[in-house]
Length: 385
Image 1 (cartoon, rainbow, N blue to C red):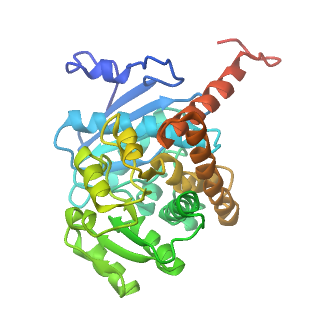
Image 2 (image 1 turned 180 degrees about the horizontal axis):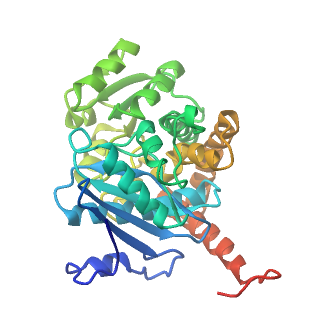
């Protein structure tokens, strides 16, 4: 087993510039503190752990198991996702920084006990700087295996003292964000009578559909995996199913909820939403904005965008609660506050004349800046630096 930490001996062109990139505004946490490349020949493990910021505390974020087209694509995803976790944890009021990990491979073919345990040893080697959890391609049972090699893992099964499936509160939090969006747009915190399109009904999406149906919304869904669609149909027979995302965008939606992988809000998608008269975008997917500027395009078209890392923070709130001894009701009460924070972001955005995504970034950066500044206060018996 080998552990090579970035900067690597011969990094690919542009790799270091992406890791250490800085923004012109000098926002706190820009650039990554640490990137670890993990390789275990025996199990076939190839993984990347990206720690974006520990300004607020240990970096917490899930492990994604995905068949990336290239190692470069895996690195880019780890960097983007870990940065998003810094902002998500800050806005959620958690004393945790942002990190994320990716395992390169097909979880349906390549995942095995040895690989997960090897990965757990790499997590352990960071001595608590990074705490992992579930993400796309990893599940509660995987966290139980990883926990056999490290204590720095959340999202374990209740049988092993964990919080269980974090998708439950992720979906609940997205629903709270959607209710707040409805309040801001239509004056009532309900989706009753509205047509909501959910793209992706896997881990989080199918729970979100349940909340929407219970609230009286008309729900339209799509998912490339037939099993996921069939599960939703079995639970909610009145849900409408369309063939793909293109068809969903043309379904005359009031609300669009991207709940699959990142980059869902491209220029073409936003244009289609505008043409269809969609009023709100609020979903569970991470890093929904395909590039900088999409948030302004949404605002210019009159589409209210609920920032992804704000509304999908229910899951990280759930697993973070596990660190101090999990209590579901306590975690759910914290996730309920996503409603209030979403309304606050919309209010700040309107007052400052900026898109909600910009207002959310500013509030998260403000908290990271103010709390990290406390480290200048020297405590008795502590060393500087």
